[in-house]
Image 1 (cartoon, rainbow, N blue to C red):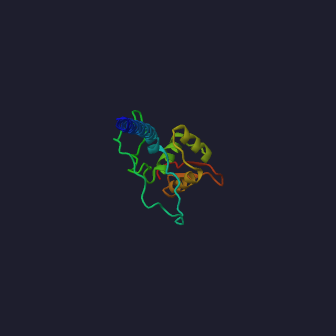
Image 2: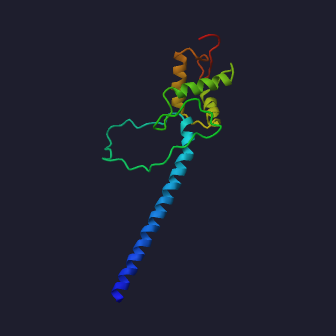
Length: 161
């Protein structure tokens, strides 16, 4: 009789432990999903993140399973002009478009990359200096912007390009 009662008590304890674990795991996954969804609107406005290009690293055989969560609508008041791609990265060419808009907004005066980066950060966009220079060179090739003399300043090209 005592052994049966002990076994039943152990089974009840195990049942409670499993339910508590499941509830805790579910709550933790919800917190992670909420945190990830708060970062998602910013991810659409940020520039392309640097990628590792080295092929020397060994990759894992199977990626970790991701929890399935419903997609959320974009935040109200979001001012992105391009839609983020499926993997969360900005579309190709977005940096150049954003920088061109900044140069238009700053008028005909010459602007240094540091000022461009500051304006981008004020808009919630983070772009590295090499990416800014690359975008400026792309815009220069399209005759959209021009470098001012031998300086590191750039301005919107006047007239029709």
